[in-house]
Length: 110
Image: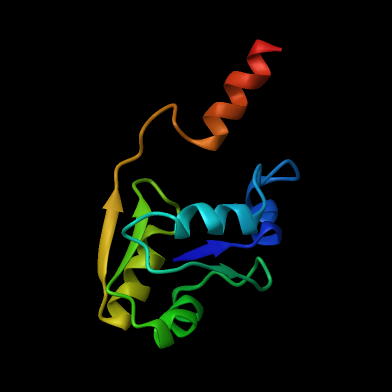
């Protein structure tokens, strides 16, 4: 499973992100029983098009690409999955359970 590098996350979400470094996020994902392995997606943050992701993932022959409902890159991820012959799994967003929500709760409690 691909984990975005710290540089890419920071560019998209701001200077205080990510909260956990990419190596730790990758290790956490790899520990899940349904995940065969994980890797960090490196490269310029401006490169986020579906064709680039499809080429990156092609050697792995993924069976599916998962994303959270409401992800601003949903259509690109669907196109990438189609190019790879992979299924798409749209996982429900759970309000209040995101890192952004946790940081907001923390900030309001200070």
